[in-house]
Amino acid sequence: SDIVPGLKKEIAARKIFPVLCASSSLGIGAVRVLDACVALLPSPEGGVMDGTGKDGKPARVFTNEKDHAVAQVFKTMSDPFAGRISYLRIRSGHFQSDGSYWNASRGVPERFSGLFLLQGKEHVSVPEAHAGDIVAVAKLKETATGDTLSTKDHAVVLTKLNVPEASIAYAIEPKAKGDEDKISTALHKLIEEDPSLHFTRDEETKEFHLAGASQLHVEIAVARLKKRYGVEVILHPPKVPYRETITRKAEAHGRHKKQTGGHGQFADCKIKVEPLPRGSDFEFVDDIYGGSIPRNFIPAVEKGIQEVCRKGFLAGFPMVDFRVILFDGQYHDVDSSELAFKLAGALAYKEAMEKAKPTLLEPIMNVEVVAPNEYMGDLMGDLSSRRGKVEGMDSRDEDTMIRAQVPMSEMLTYGAQLRSITQGRGSFHLEFSHYSEVPHAIQDKIIAQSKGDKGAAEAG
Image (tube, rainbow, N blue to C red; front, side, top):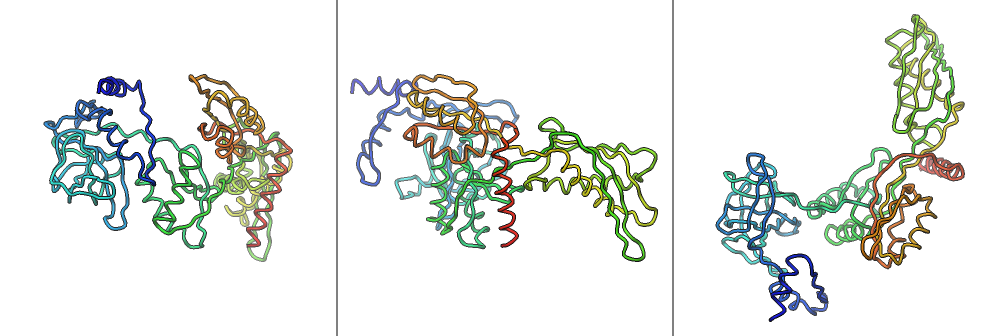
């Protein structure tokens, strides 16, 4: 009893972090954990939350039962019987089980149809709840995780919950054909519960991606898909969004001529291509003088080139960071058309690519790895084996953070290797940095694989 007040004070100041052992599956230690929470953790009373008031100015909400009603949704779940359930932490005031309130985050009204205290799996109905309580409300139509509920007259939006950034993504596809819609519906329900999950479609690779804070995070989401919604999926590393570019200047000539009786098709254009700095994408320059190509046909040349450059030249990846200069051409008063000049532009592009020495570019990622100091040697060696360039290290007590740049293709399976090296004590974060040229030995493998995949797709 003499120690408890001191522990309580130091825990509230975040100087001491209690560790208790328990097993929920065996029913060991659960009561001790609950007793420790009551005895040692700070009371909600006196807590302060920052937010934004109705007038847009900063506001502070104090945990006080006598203040205006303010609560924040910290979790959302989909129950097969009760539907959507929102879990609220009441920050101030009190809420009635049949009350009408204001979602200040979205500017919409919500009406409660019951309040429930959480006791294990049981939800106990109560007529009202007060500041400091954690309660559940079913079937809120417009409310999501992180939203603030209050009264309309005293609306306040509390600071959003801190959601971990996604650091790893997997391509996801159904085991059974035709289940794409089921996956999408089920995943959107999971994301309502866990906003740190992200589900997107890559327009370039046509893959669906599921991203989370770690490999384990994504695997747990997949297990929930199967258990809760009966949807089985396959996870695999996402395709790397390579790019193509040119490394030298070139000139090319494209002529489209077709005579089939009556009106024919004719268009002739000459272009120059030249490389641009990384990140410049594509530029088209009209350098026609003297009317060798009429003004109304010049956009067709550009369109023809843009359409084919999306398919690349070496391996089917988009061609970027180059300039096209249209400087000469010919036309026919009767046979020339936009379609003919579009086709001529595409022919000129293909000839130019054969001369301009195209190459592959790969995405380079900024990588931050945090792990105990004892694993630094193995981690540095592993990053070097992945063609990584270590840019610095920062010590953090018993941990060290490594900052490096590594090709995305080398990081697709890094999570499992990091767990193996650090015995699960390491973490990492990725974000895109820039594109860089792929070494020639690796380029050949990528090109061969891309052509093989394309052939298999066409055969299928």
